[in-house]
View 1 (spheres, rainbow, N blue to C red):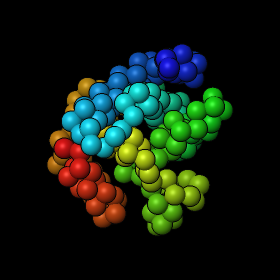
View 2 (view 1 turned 180 degrees about the vertical axis):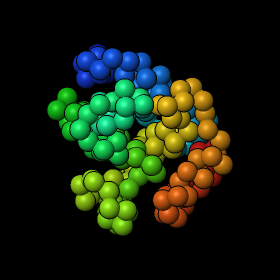
View 3 (view 1 turned 120 degrees about the vertical axis):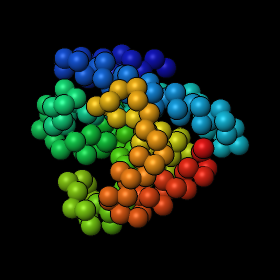
Length: 178
């Protein structure tokens, strides 16, 4: 499936955003596919992995993040579940779950409540191997610094700020995917 028309449909109205999201998402897709190639024992669906990685940030246009050309009303952290709502409307519910579950290392209800996040109180942790791989790969790339891959140490340092739950998930993924 060609996902680029869907990205154009939602992002073209926002000058510069399509290029930012596509560049970032292509890097995430490349890293995700590299993990799948290096770990065939995981049995990841590579076609789905690529599609979902390219679409994982489709909801950013609804968020308030001016530094990356996003001028929507919602806090940035909401772009995941908002992306899910978009892809549910596009009849792509599996792809939508990737959007919702890719924030940080995923979010449990307990984390959402403890951190007082403006999110629905439901589990937003990656479940499938594809969701986990994309969530992991996304941590290494920022839309604000396109094309620059963060080190494992830099990613760990960022995750550490939010508690140990995410850090444990990340370390487990490092052992599994790297």
